[in-house]
Amino acid sequence: MKILVPVKRVVDYNVKVRLKADGSGVDTANVKMSMNPFDEIAVEEALRIKEAGNAEEVIAVSIGVQQCQETLRTALAMGADRAILVKTDAAIEPLAVAKILAKITADVGADLVILGKQAIDDDSNQTGQMLAALLGRPQGTFASELNLADGKIAVTREVDGGLETLSLSLPAVVTADLRLNEPRYASLPNIMKAKRKPMEQLAAEDYGVDLTPRHNVILVSEPAAREAGVKVANVAELVAKLKSVGAI
Ligand code: AMP
Image (cartoon, rainbow, N blue to C red; front, side):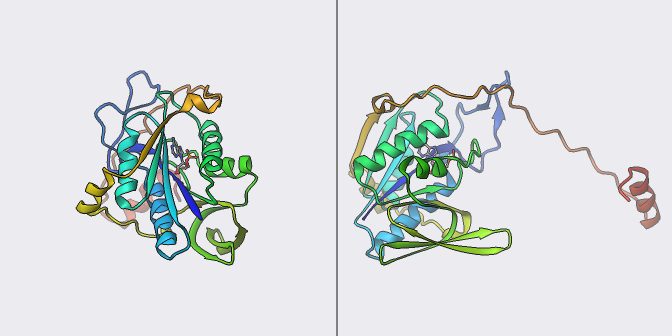
């Protein structure tokens, strides 16, 4: 079995983002970029499936600018076998990403695609679902546990009332939630080894997918600043204050 893991290059989750002055989006110039955290979890899960003897190959793919190579090298250093960079300088939306991923899934013959549940930059939470629909495959989203047996995959999902377990027949699409696993750190020898692992480079335009955005971003703005709090001397003053603002 081959597992495809799409990994997105996003602003590192520790960075406090700044907006562009014209309100058109987030300023990514000179900002630390990293692999989307849910994609690290997806890579980790794919590696565990391979290490358990249930897959032969883990392939990482990233769609975006040339620097996505660095993100792919991280996946290779974690243990992925090979990588595919689909290069484009255009800002692409989840539907176009899903269409390209559908073609790559077929090209590499991946039985299982494990994506992150969402990319932390745009918080779209769409690509995995769209990919499953385009491929006509069953989907298990927000997975917090995966178990493979007899050509089926059991996906445990955290839902409002507790845990739901689905049984999907393979081939399938799964998206990783936070509690699925704790991703490994790449060791220095593995980082060195990753430099020699194969990385294929293709152009997004070659997939015949319309990359034109279907949405216009009207404005990206900072959240309203929180008002400073006040200190009260005693409980009576606190109650009076809460009453005055209509909180009680
Ligand atoms: P989204 O639907 O944008 O929230 O993204 C969900 C998941 O789709 C991510 O966690 C990635 O696994 C995958 N994905 C989205 N965009 C890309 C991209 N440009 N390249 C590779 N994978 C992507």
